[in-house]
Length: 263
Image (cartoon, rainbow, N blue to C red):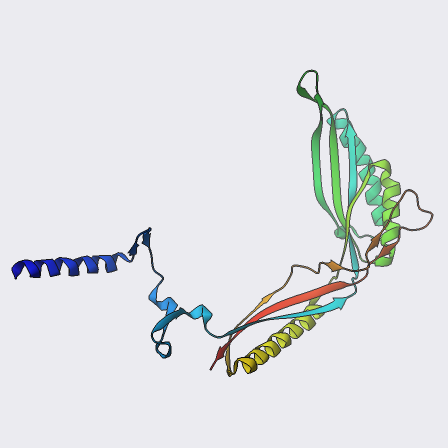
């Protein structure tokens, strides 16, 4: 009888130690269980335990509005190559000085011109016979982003910059934006919420449940409008007229996620 009592005591002690260690021992090793607070007992389902994150009705709503851009962002500059760094820098500086003058003389304010990239890199060449690489010169690149607030002048600005920088001119990219998109985001946000509410009501009706309190709502919005329609940028040689630029429209998009309690 005493031996049986000692055996039972050992088993009980082992169970207590396992519980205090906070781990479940399985064939694959030890796995720490989630905190008890992360679960809710569901007596109506025969004691099934499920995560609180699965409770309620989750919906996603989307709203969008179209807007005409009111500014152009031009990524442009110069790139010069020479046998020495000093010569490459001089050539790039001279060409960039002409580009800056062209920008300012065409109405681009100095505060709307920002340096995006400046670099000096060696230009290398592989010598096949000697199986080695040599430096044959240096390349200096100076790129700025210019904000043009009058879209109808964008083509003239591009032409002026190309003329000022000559063969060293580089125009890397053009994009469109809205200086103050607040109003458009408000409109898109309202549409997104309305869309989510409509979806929640429809789902509740189909599932034969009643919507309760709104538990959670969040918004997911792109950093800036990214969809451009009817975009045209063409600059081939010395055009007799200004380079044509068509801004089209920007799509402002907002997405919201909402969670309702259900009965």
